[in-house]
Length: 104
Image (cartoon, rainbow, N blue to C red; front, top):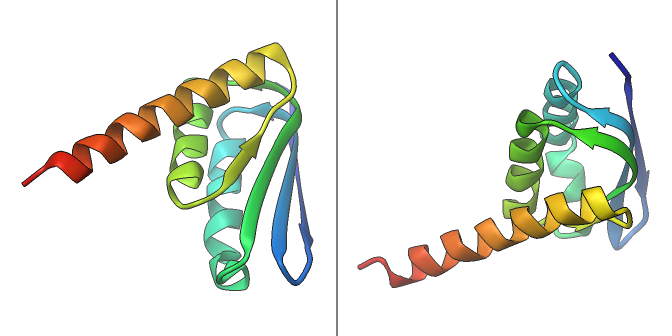
């Protein structure tokens, strides 16, 4: 099983997460843990999650990325595979948001 490297770079206006490797269990749990621990540090800043160096994402990883996206993270992907995953996450999030708006 491969590893996942998580690098967090902070500026006054942005918190950038760079993920490298495989986004699978048990690394998804570590990603969620880091996300929770840095919540206060994010405050009102833009949050970007760079997936350029991610080589594989399992279903649990996709679900975690969907949660980060729902919380306002911008997902960046360049490869065909990761762009496809991000596109599906964004599409599902748009559908959920539309359903929430139309609910009485």
